Image (cartoon, rainbow, N blue to C red; front, side, top):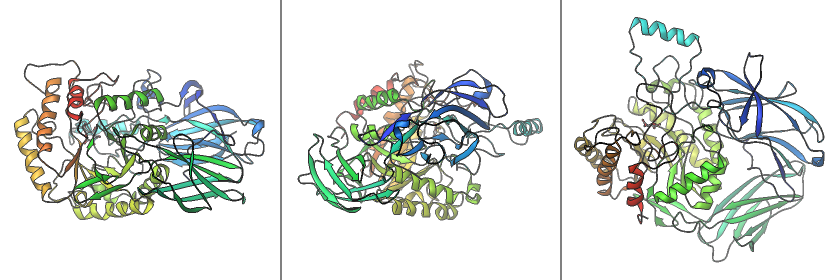
Length: 581
Ligand code: GCB
């Protein structure tokens, strides 16, 4: 079950379990030190850390402070990739499927205040046709030519399978482990379990409170403005708050004004930040607070040297300040829900988010035969429950680049119920999208049916490579077609691999000049169309991928290098986006 983000206040306490834990591959005798939270993969120059598919074990001693007597004590994991089995003193206390959403286990009766125990966490990094994201089973990897049919290659592939080699069906390194914080949390026994806030521009905020534990008394809610003044109050588990002359949450460069909903239930208190803003699609426009909003900002990954996909608050801060430097106003959480700290930061900084589930790697048409829809919907609902109150989140993405054109009707039948489920799950009923890959857009049925059409296009890179005139022609021709669909369109990925420091008098592929020329050409096409309401270059920074003949030290389509130095294209967008709001 998804629970509120942990909080320290007068009645709630947390104890961060980050640090150096014990670690080993299942079956090993010897434990070795490992940093938590972080991906384990880059913490040791060892083949197994990078490549082994299977279960790893983490271990440490935990103690519940005796001062927490009488409290409800939980162990909360913000994200363990890709699934976790948690034991205390050898006894299973929790299992969780999926690597990008939180889960918690109540320790009442398992470990009491004043007691210690040995916590072990088994993390499974295997990916296959029943996980999100998807791993390959038998077929070729996402990027890598396996020369199907060559007897020696086929035989060697069988050998690989026997060795448990496990490959992503997606273009980012399969970083795993305990990548996000682990905490002990203490709340009163009768506690606030969930808070839902649905603001309107007129200052009315519909709210709903869910409580847990024994009946604990009345529910009261107070809204505080940014200075801490109480500006509205209400009583009861649901109702409407009324804020006079509300200040709106506006995306950057406006003011992302935040209120705090202080919920009081018996002894418990929780302070939930929120913003007053409305999101709506009207014709081919995307409106935030009734004003047309144009998305401009590169897509991201959670990726950096050393930490891998592990939470790094300093990196998050640096990245968001680089978004400001770029004059960017948004990103998509390609290709999974990010750590909660990032959304909280974007609430404060006014950076808009398109929030994406880890449904990536479904590019083979056979996925319509896999038994995945139920789990997919659960992950989607859990993401929406976790992120529903963030003003920065303005749209949900139910997946990235599935095959939607081989069997358009099967694709429609799979994705439409997920689209409906997202609308049903979101109390704020934000727009919903599915990100389309470069395909037979004339055959596809589902992408065009989304509230906003998000399409990834690589004219001039993966096709028409190196010929930007041809790419311009193709892009224009496709945009002519979309013009007839009467939908708002965002170019949700476009980019060119670029080796920082590689230059050419002629803009040739992989040079910084080509990356700029590619973006200039694309900008020209996009600027001609009013229904194009956004551009999200791929990618903010270079990032790690699995090895393959098309990836030299990872994906190099970053506007920045992996250590966040701007390439020429970053300067290009900084200029282009200045004053674009
Ligand atoms: C895509 C994928 C993204 C890849 C990118 C690329 O279409 O959505 O995950 O990294 O292309 O660079 O090939």
